[in-house]
Amino acid sequence: MRAMNVLHLGIKELRGLVRDPMLMVLIVYAFTLAIYTGAKSMPENLNKAPISIVDEDRSPLSQQITDAFYPPYFMPPTLITPTQMDARMDAGTDTFALSIPPDFEANVLAGRSPALQLNVDATRMSQAFTGTGYVQQIVTSEVNSFLARHRDETSLPVGLDLRARFNPGLNPTWFGALSNIITMVTMLGIVLTGAALIREREHGTVEHLLVMPVSSLEIMLAKVWSMGLVVVVAAAASLLVVVEGLLQVPVAGSLSLFLLGTALDLFAVTSLGIMLATLAGSMPQFGLLLVMVLLPLQVLSGTVTPRESMPWFIQDLMLLAPNTHFAMFAEAVLFRGAGLAIVWPQLVALAVLGCGLFMIAHARFRAFLR
Image (cartoon, rainbow, N blue to C red):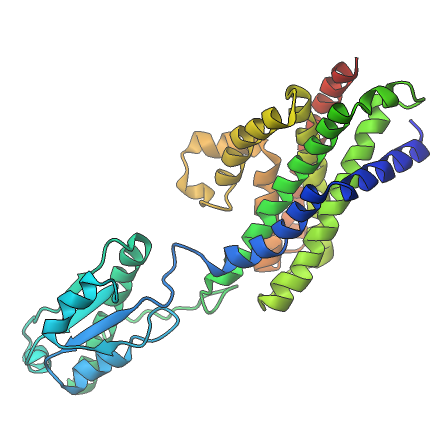
């Protein structure tokens, strides 16, 4: 193998990528708009839900409960009458309508258990499911704090002192932005290398390579380093410009360590992309293979659902996937500021899996060229 052949073939791949406008648009979109929208629209979190309150008590306690609903979880509450409640719910104006009955404060102070009525528009499924718990928690917290001020017991028997590490404000944007970068690295690594090989076949340039004094190993290494370099540069730019700059999300760990892990992950997933391309006869077939491979890889890697919530055999099986180790590595570095002494097992696993996938892909690639 000659290094100059690998270098020049890789430059050829970069030129071919630049001449493909759709792939260039995909790269730019994946590391800019997709990161931003994914961070700002986390569906499992409540954000600016409209709520109205029917306050028939008009007491300090009811006013305290009303004042407890504020952005970003809720819109400022609208005070309405009982006759307006059904009409506003039917029109879709409010997702939640909280009714506070007369003498609510008096009944609370007397030790009774008065009931509040919460009406929920369940057609807004994500807000309804999450927001009901938020409303219950807010009302309970305000009632308990009110009672603590008006009774001899100044505190509850047990107090919970909550300290959130790594994301003190529990801001879903922080998690969404960094998780999307992890996802896009794996996706683009597979797509770009596979598309590069399919493009060579469709344009008939594979036959040109066969008559050149280059080996299959040189051709494959050129595709791996060139497409991997594009994704590494795009990920670094997205992390600095979109995540830290536009979204104002702090990155706890070392950027250079993250890029090292990204390069090892790309060594594995670009090899996987070449292997899938050798199995596909055309770009549409490659697209179908991506659906079958990428979806389980992304969903079961731990970025969408915590691995601890999966069955044990799924957890063990996904250890054979490089992006599982990359997700664990990247979350430790970006979220928790972990150093090399902590994440070295994931780096070793990525290197071993990368070598294994590369050898399998090279064997397939050699058969593909014959």
